[in-house]
Length: 170
Image (cartoon, rainbow, N blue to C red; front, side, top):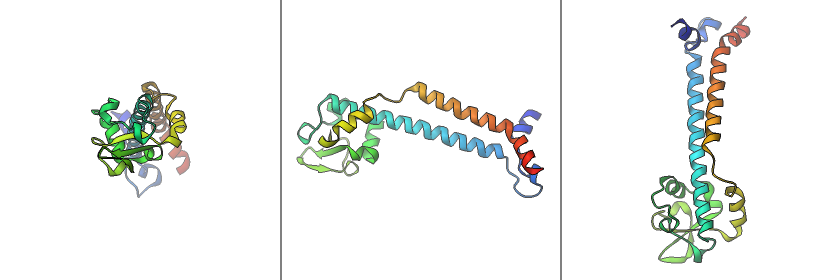
């Protein structure tokens, strides 16, 4: 139990007298958890971008005339892809949508329901899409290594923080 008190509940007031009395390791833990959640979110988003781009290229959706629905692409039930298309974001630079009732008009990704729209890669951006998303989806191994590194940095900071604070205070 003293181990937890020595490392997990490290207070700045122990080193600087009166003032800030909050466990610094809780701040580090919150930052680490935030970083872990951000890494997971980015990986899932990139995986959805890769999947959509791969399917659009595989099905030849490289012009308005060749645009495909999510059902035709086999992505109707993929929540990550639907969420990505609703938000638009990075995909707006090389993926466009058309309404089924007006196949000649281009619509911004955020302005149309992914369930009813047809999607295609902009003709002048097909090489860029292949280059960016052609190398493969983010792997679970790279995510696991990143998460282990974040946890390692947190643990290293947690164990070295007392000596760092002691040297700064005195």
